[in-house]
Image (cartoon, rainbow, N blue to C red; front, top):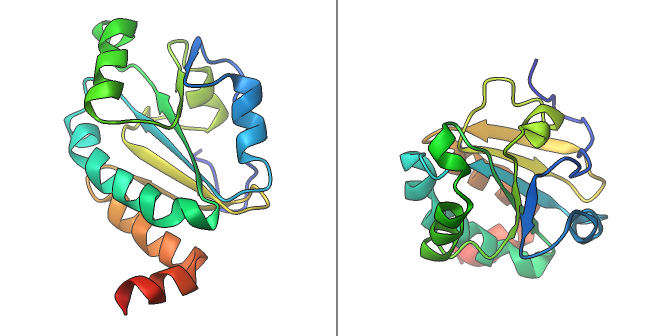
Length: 159
């Protein structure tokens, strides 16, 4: 069963590797802050297509306290090539704290049973899930949820 609205943000335990930070830093970084966690894979075309839109959302809301954590979840053996992952991180300007989930422990912690990528989880400052969205239109769902979470910011952007 997928993670339900209102469930708590899991700890980032079990990643096989961390890029840009560590698990402890990631847990501290998101504590008490609205947080967007997104799962992606090097073999996921939709993930790569959505990255610029995701970066725009991040830029729009990070000054309001939004934190982001990227989780690379391999779908195929080729996705476990860490050098390819690092190259894609650089190519798509992923500056988020990034966990490598080669053993799918974070996938399991977030109840991503289907192994969806991309999938986006938005948590409020109390660490409660506000929305979960997956696939091609996930960023659109996320945009609406962020506008509700940060109504003043959305109003300023449309003015």
